[in-house]
Image (cartoon, rainbow, N blue to C red; front, side, top):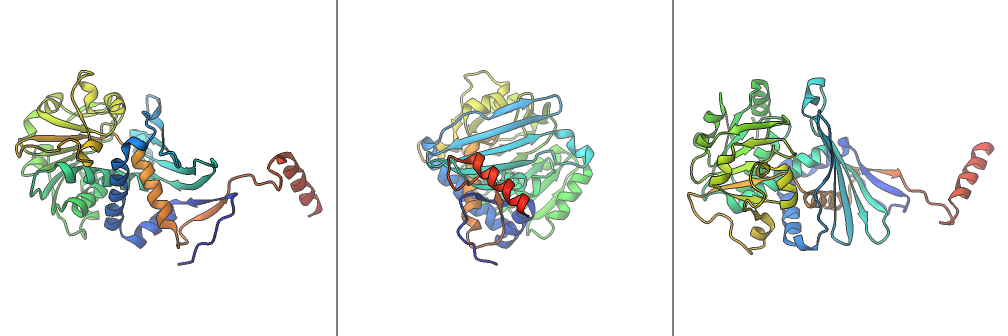
Length: 355
């Protein structure tokens, strides 16, 4: 690997999809998940230092395009992300993303990166981090319902962070399940393919739901959920899109990232505005308890929040040091005199004429 050099102010490190894959493979997928979970946990522990707002969303019949900004006063980060469930019919990703990390004092960006792969990693790392505080003691088996692009990352994160050893896979598309099972063959997990959601949750202490359709759906019915399990609900992430029957919510202790956003986008959009929830940062900091009873149903109603992307951007920035897994983009104008932007164009014109 090449040693990085100081970057001129007008050049911004850019991590392409290829660069991200090289970085992840260099570190190792499970190591990335563990390290990324630690960054996310660190930022949850300083939750009160962040600017927080629900993401800015532009909805259409086909999907949603969102911006997710936040700042801790020293750095500013945002992610652009879409969610278009029908994209896969055209051979496109349902979710794509890119992100920027900037220095607050100057306003200059210090990182531009793909975040399609990175979002899958940070979502899985967040799921497993939260589960570490909520899963029943001795949990070893997870049902993974919805075997699309994020499923393998979720399974590996729960293995690396929570110690599960068995996954039970189900998707309404058998080819998706076959794909996930194939990709997890060498993971060290025991992989069981299931014929139904009911079959998948049988014997599982953890249930993760991650489906793509933008609709009110019932992936888990009330009779599928027994006492003492942990539900990681990550597929319901915009208005009009849910995965769980509301009776499950009534029987569960529900944990969320940022209530003003989750009440709009999460499973709890089905519930009254005063439905009680616990903010997960309070559990991580020890201010409130997580699981309090072995028969309690815990539910992480995860929609993804900007601080998690901020953590992921910080992580990539730090991991790039000493590698060649980026390109320097000439993104920022840098005239000799900061006040003479027009003159810079004039000098470029003269240089081109001379050439």
